[in-house]
Image (cartoon, rainbow over all chains, first blue to last red; front, side):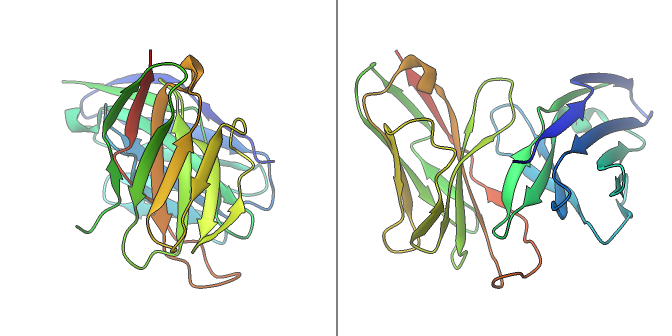
Length: 112
Length: 118
């Protein structure tokens, strides 16, 4: 089955700096890679996703890159703000019905 | 409501009791997923429904866990003879799929049920 690894487990940045979270996956058949933000006690919320036929996608301060050959993908947050503080999960979907395998999460702290 | 709704939000049970957790997916969403999220961990897949059919239950930890979605909408996750290790947040997610082999659709999560077994 799919295995998703995520690094780092914790990340502290100064407000305004950039944050990068990296993930690797094992199943070459995986073709959809969403990123979720989860605040304490809240539901995971989709913030950006990328499909395997695309190498990069950007949405305002958030961007995701995908390297299919190396089987890794990354989340980039620029100009970080305190409200970006949360746990971020990468995920990979494989199989014919979107079975999701999540990474172990990165706790991002943005220091004002 | 437009989102995935789960109830109850919190459930406390004594070890050995049975519990039932409910999920109301977004109207019209064909796919429904249950996940278990332990403290400080990512959600882990439990089971998947396409309409009323349970197509994958490979993530259910034991035969004490049972899920159903009899009419292809609301789903219930039942845990029998609960154990302390069952304590976790149980998340439900739904998504709209266009059919076999169609492009993936994002999953929308509910707020979860926090289950505590004493």
